[in-house]
Every structure is written in structure tokens, then in C-alpha cells.
Length: 419
Image (cartoon, rainbow, N blue to C red):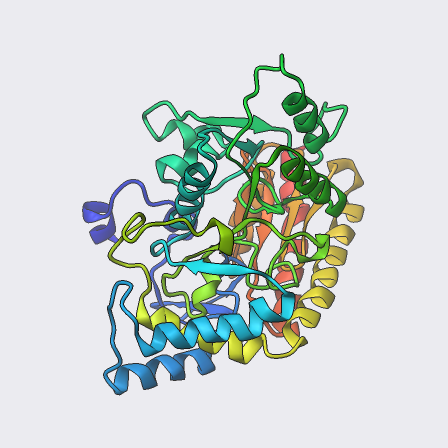
């Protein structure tokens, strides 16, 4: 471990939660170098919806490498790029009637957000953006500016401007919903709120405590955007690719955003890939307006296309995620009922689930205790008060039950010590 202390930056975080050296991974488990298995309810922060080293995806990548497929091509035309675009069109966009063109903005989710913000400002000629309390959209400056977490914003070291935060659904102490409050301000010439270029929102706030927006709330938000000619950006980086059940997390609300940001599991295998989906009429880019070296890693195209063919050619994965997501929620609700004095609250949707603890430090203590029992989870929320579950969507029923049982056995002792 000394090599990490000597040479690895102090900025590292997950390794502090799980101080072991991992060597290999398969399905829903990671293995430390001494061979101990750890059940993974973290899944690469949502980048491994199909588990570790999925056999279908691994074979597609190995075959591509073995035939000397192009590994790096910026935005040049390649067979791998074409195959991904075709699979995405045929299996995702066309069945849902979604009118999007695809921008490959760079390797990560923050790149997708930055591209959306830049394009919204270019299209509208306006600069400000409305975001929401407890939101998180990435660690680059533009993405941080529309994020709500004070600690993460402070790390920028500069003023983060051109954004106005509004209350997210369920924000305490607000007498009217965020969209209605926003509509009133935008309609009032004396409110001091200028019409923004865009509104950016997560339907479920992954880093913000697993808060989930109601479908009616989201539909109200669309109406406000339409009324005031403001573009709507949905950040689906963590909640997309089936995490909440449907491929896109906004489908259940019946809305069609102007732009959608995807990353994490869109590459299938855990390799870097990001997409900014935009309505065709918004494609006003000139060549080179948004550029970068890693705008489409070919290996990611290969495994991303294979993931779409393997898991999204029928409704099996969506049905499974919805059904077992209800089982996760029921299990967490049962834990809350077991400890009525603790004020536990179940949050999230589908395979993005959380259990909020009113006792300071309890959520982290549960994650620490679970790690000692061989289960990987992280906390969520600005106060770190939510135990966050992101199991692979392909996890077996036995592994899912094992992880839920570990959580249940850890909660009681932690709460007892907190009294």
C-alpha cells in the first residue's frame, strides 16, 4: 500500500472508503489481491450496469482487438462508430420516437454536460442557466457552476457564475413546486430573473441524496420551458441506460427533453464514452466548435453497441429492473419499519435506491460496517446521510438478496451505537 501513499495524489476518495487492493472482477463481485470477494453495490458509480467483465461485451472487445480494429480515430468515420450509431438508432431512439442527433463530446459525463451548456447558449444567445438544489453535474467548471453541492463547488477555486438555483422537487420549506415558482419569476418583469438559455435537471439526483422528481413535477417543468422558450437539458449520466428501469430515466414522465447527457454505462464495459443527444434543429455547430482527442474510443463503441444488442433488443432487462427495484425498495422499507425511532427514509427509483439516516454519521458507519462484511456501497447527499445502492442491473437474485441482508444486519448495530 505504500506506493499509493508515496505517489498517488491525496485527491483520491473511494480508495479511502475501501482500503484494499483489488485485482480482478466478475459479474457483481470484485476480488482483492488476496482473493477475498466483495459484493459490488457501487458498480463503478453506475458505469457498470451490466456488471464486471460481462462475457458478451468482453468477447466483442477481444474480437475487435484481435482483428486489429482501429483503436483511436478522433471523429473520423470508422466501422465501430457506424455500428454504434446504427445500434443506438435502431434499439433506443427509433422505438421511443426520439428525434435526436448524437454529439460525441469527450470521454466523460462532465464533457456531455459542458457540450450541452455551450450549445444551449449558442442556440439561444443567452448565458444564464437554471439548475436545482442538491444537483450534481460534474467537476469541470461549467458543470460545477450548475451543481448544488457547496463543498464540491468550493474546490473550483473561482467564482461559479451564470447559474440560478431553484428548489428541487420536495425541497423542504417551499410552499409551491419548483417549476411553478420558476414560472412565476420568469413571468414577473420585476423578479430580477432573466430568461435563461436552459434548465438542467436530473430526474433522480444520484449524488444529491437519491431524491426522485415526481412525473407531474417534470411535466410542469417542460411546460415552463415551452412557455418561456427555454431549452431543457436532462442529465442522465448516472440514471440513464436502464438504471431506473426504462432506458432513459425521463421516459415514465412522458417528456422529451431538448438535450440529454449520457455517459457511464453507455459504453457497456466500463470504458469511457459520453453522448450529448440534441434535437436536430439545435445542431448549429460549425466544424470544430466542440473538439477533443477522445471523442469516441473505438473499444467503447464496440462494447456499447454490443450492450445495446444484448440487453435492449427486447424488454427483459427493463422488466427485471422494475420488478427487482420494487424488491429493493420493499427491503429498505422493511429496515425502516424495524427502526421506527431512527426516522429512516427510503429514496430513489429502480436500481438507484437509498436509505436516508437522520443520525449524523450513521450512513457512513453502515457503509463501513457493510465493507467489513464484504459489501461495497457509498454514501450520497450533501451531508453524506444516505446509503446509496447501485447494484449491476444483471446481478443475480441470490447476490441481490445477500447484499440486502448485509445492509439489514449492519443497520441495527450502527443505530444502537448512535444512541
